[in-house]
Image (cartoon, rainbow, N blue to C red; front, side, top):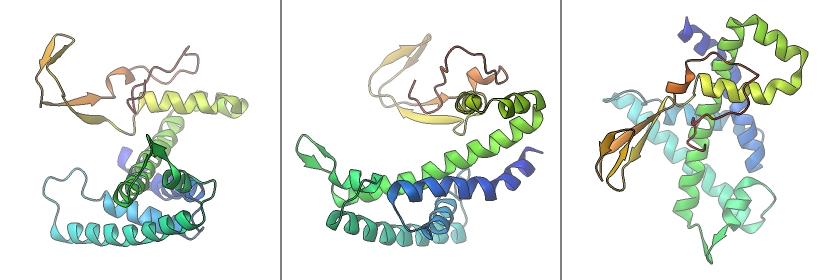
Length: 212
């Protein structure tokens, strides 16, 4: 059943996720479909150790096309910067140094793919969870101020990112587990998700995006 919910929510979630990216980068409105299609194609091989040649070729094509499009946007912002996110990246400096072209381009590609994928997954999860909990849905409908807290709780309960690999930089011990420099460890964001979403939690202590 979850897969069905996921498939039905993707058209809505995908479009909704692409819209803020276009606005943040001040890209033309028609970019929304391009961004969504490129993100879907770039992430098509996820979960497969040996993707087929067709998938790999399509991914390569999407990467080439998106890089060309984003390069044009970057050049436009360099000539006429605005107040959008892309202009901020172009103008950003750290200790007198700016991002070079490859760094800018790779950052944009990451935002394009990862930004849409996580948002699409979150929207799909919300549709499923709220559809299964009429009382919670009714509570939110009666008080729209609960929406931000609901989003945080659903991120905690059903993370768009179930795990994230980490490179161990030095020998250390965590919760009695010894890890050596060079090991790969995975942050799991589902351990704290056993409790169903509650809107009376004092604070969101989710580590979903490793920011808490």
